[in-house]
Length: 160
Image (cartoon, rainbow, N blue to C red; front, side, top):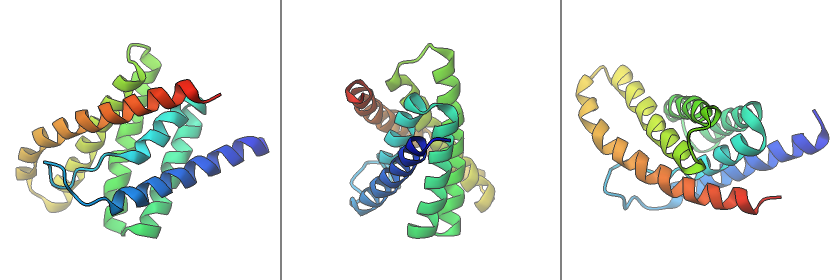
């Protein structure tokens, strides 16, 4: 791996961590409790298109682990891993299919992230009743994925 690639991965991971911290400071004002915009997904989406699957996976995994240890707990890291890894897998499949725009890939990732987290919650809390929350989370995932997708599309057009 070249020095340039290592530097790019480091910068993207650092940016994702900063965006995660910034997002944690935003007061909850969304209609769906616990919903976040997913600013860090902007970095993963950009990495997927610029660095490819391996680079994006590395940035995503390192970001989740470092952010979990720095700002969260083991439980928050578990939810982030479930959502982040499922989101990444779905975004990768959509990207490779060639049938989705950057915004479409982002929306699919946002929805998958929420599905991953709700499935972990159902398993950990041993309550299928949490699935009643899923439709609200799916709508939130579409909305957040759309916003991040538009931003990501614009960003990718401007990057060299």
